[in-house]
Length: 630
Figure 1 (cartoon, rainbow, N blue to C red):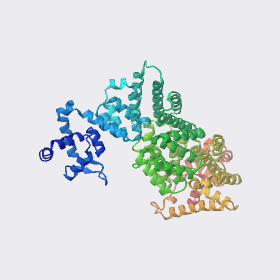
Figure 2 (cartoon, one colour):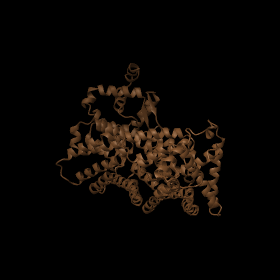
Figure 3 (tube, rainbow, N blue to C red):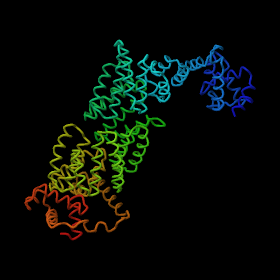
Figure 4 (cartoon, rainbow, N blue to C red):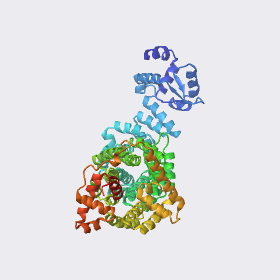
């Protein structure tokens, strides 16, 4: 093929056309003005391109206006090979070396606002100064605008002495690695920059580099949720960065906002995110705009403003582009959580699966966050074993990668799954080992120790209310109302549930009530009988009825499982404890009746539940009556 192109195509052209083809082969695409610039005021670029097209000289038009063209790939490769072999071009004897052709192309692209192409040709010309200037992007570096791959390729080609001579190149190197989630080598590049800066005068330029290095370290700390490091490095960055360096100042402001969010100071986080968005939008720094907007969505969701949060996440998806920036996985995950709360489970699953696909392009931490939502969906759809398998994998990942922030989140999800499996002992161990108050409460409730459950919830509620955490407050109030109802404090439970309903109705929370099970049905019915909030309660009860009907319609793989005898016979003392449970005795009352320590009674409860394969008192009583154990 190459022989044919040389003998039958190239060599049959006039010398002028051959020269045109060789010199313009450095271009990935061609247009008349660009060709004229590369050939130094040639003047007939468009006409020559049209001639080549009419002569079928392996040139392809790229638009309907026939303004832009490109050579066929094989033909272009041949032309470039021939150009490299030309001694005259290589030495510049013709007055137009290959490097000079690239510089002319770079100048034309820059003048026409095509900075990425201008950068590529400057790099091909090995003009370090020009390439570095174009890489900086005049405000927003090119690697923030989708050119991370060519930027990294060029930086990786530079010898260490060139990087040391210009410390800002080390910093750009680290930044491009960050953008592409290659975190392992970031600190090495930053140390290289600091070594190259030793002894330099601490002028505005050097201080600005110090600030950029701090931004990078803060960003790495964000990926590991290291609050103190984020705060220290972000503040150091803002102290040193030049006031006009908005790309890095917006990044430092965003990371500081994230640290505030991790600390629970949502108001400060909201303010920082808003400032970061204002700065990033003013310079077209799309990545920080995306990250800060995701942060706003997180806060709105946490403040129970679900409609507003969904709109914000939707705006992120619009900004993410096509193909979407992988960071938009966070928006899909937020929408998955909100759709779950609205009981739109199909939409929740779709967003969750899309989030996983995008998260795989970033890091394992985000994949774990996706799997937590996916496991919840699996569990409520009846696939408890599938949920347990997902969580087992997630638990392994968080420990393997030391994702400290995710460890209690995974443990809390595992507790719920263990409770559904009737494994109260392991659930109890996990909840207390990780000191998760909500999980501890659910274990106490499953064991029938409502007094212990209430003792955990009261200080927890005070804490979240003092912090102003609306999402946690609603969770605690809903659970507390259920525990009070089971404890026998019906009036207080009803009043507390009314508070929860008033908080939840504006955002149309559904799942937070449904997930509490049968006890919530009774409690909602009590409230409905008073003629209060009948529409909202009616909607919730309708969901309960629909799910119960759906459950009944599903084929039971083991139809007689619910009437099978206990996996191990109950002892006489266990039967006695079970009889007192059916009479409504609390654990403390049972301990007094049988002259046993409270912990001993709880131990009996665990063994009874385990043998009967149930999760809580009401189920144990129903099972015992059905089996004639009492």
